[in-house]
Length: 386
Image (cartoon, rainbow, N blue to C red):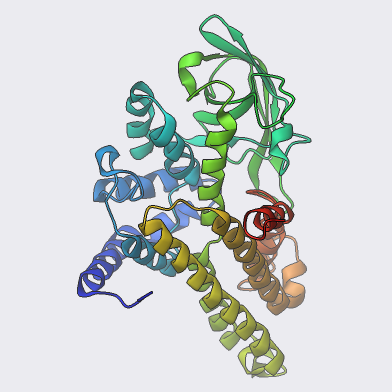
């Protein structure tokens, strides 16, 4: 596998850098990084991507994709992460859009894809339930047929950005089958529908991004069911593979490692820069080596994708190692902050509060998207045949 960039790829890299220099400015970064203005900021960022034609590079060209090569996609994500610009919010453009494109009918594609592309709709994911998280097939939210509608009753939990969402893509049980993976359907639910209640969950870092969502006799048109009734598990699995690959976050972890190194040059212990400490350098080097290996694994997965192969067990491996490295980086940063990282609120330290928040929320990284324990089981079965 030759990882050297061609002249065409180098020209594309220059174009990406120029776009990011112009489009990702300090004012927009401040909006996106402030919880009070995050939604407004992200919608503005995504509109800039849309006008550039880069909102959905992985989509087919006929729906608004870019027809980038795998290498160009890798270049874009590396450059984006390097300057701290966020990915587009995945629930719409990456997750549900991939299912609509693959399994939706023409009417559904015409209705939903243009609005996702233009960031006119904000989506959330209705998968996890109390008692059905990583064991997703245990879900109990019911959808009963009633004429040309379903009537949905039940609840979902850990629903990120449900407080902002216009739509939810949701797994519901439409048949009480002996095999739990059967009898599940994939619905698109208008969050303004009567009978939906959203209750906030404030996470340990003090931020409200998670929610519990309750459905009480919510009517959903059958026209908003993706694919066949009772076949939703098939569609959900394809979506989860894309989600887990994205969760690895190689480019963003590389940026955080660079940030760690710079902070360690400024932070002192005993009058000397922390970067001069042999134990710190050893811990940082371990992370950098593991991150290089993870990047190589990602490149191999992208190379296979360039030949038309969808993400398989590699998505689980990337998710496992990627989230473990994210937590290792967060652990090292809060260790650098020392007592300043233990102060609730602004300690006056230049990165103590950031270290505490990222460390606290980061504990969930090995859980969301399917816990790492479950991913190891998937890998053992798919790769080792156990």
